[in-house]
Image 1 (cartoon, rainbow, N blue to C red):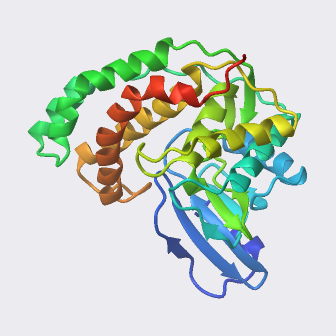
Image 2 (cartoon, rainbow, N blue to C red):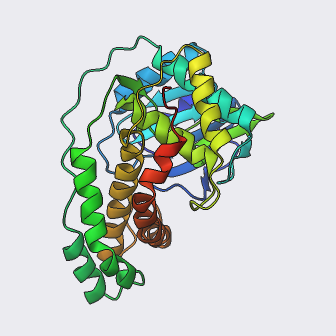
Length: 309
């Protein structure tokens, strides 16, 4: 946190307090005589911090419900602290889902310049090798990864070959329950550092599904899923055509997230940045169990999508 001038935030009333959780970065609450702030210490991922901060400022100025962006540097993001209730990983109320859809439509309508970034690298295909390393090092989830290594490779092929219909929008890219608060029953959008351009179907499918289900896939509420889309359309958004592209961003992001944590587990040491090693093991266990199930259910999930008559 030493690359941001925290003195401009006021005189601290106590030391920064580490906030538990966080699947990629470390978060602290800093209380000063001028207010309370969320100070996020970024890990070594190549975030486009300046671009994201500019996008956040535009979204905040447009009235998007979110923490006020205060400062940004290469390794640190500062926002004003927002009180609210955590959103549990379970189907949200329909009214809440509808408002998230409205927020997305307003966000996608913003006119913010964004230079194209480098082309995304192909999804990694080294899952059999990783399974072998996991077995050799005695990882607790090694047997499950070995059993599903070919499925993980098939998911990587889908991610690389699935056609995206467009349009591409500048958006948050990671609206999940853990990146939302509920304040008086209404959504507040957190954690913007993954913002960037994304195929619209991928953003809508990921968001709607995450708000419509619990931790697994046995309790998916179609009415909540469609409430996100209804809110999006009511706020002026145009829905893309149905197809697997609605879910390929979700499954590809989960695949990459699992692999990133898996490599941390294979290293076997606590890194100086990012989440604790125990949390990385939890993420890998969830991915090893959940990704094959999500992949198998893709045809079923497409039945949630609006179809033209």
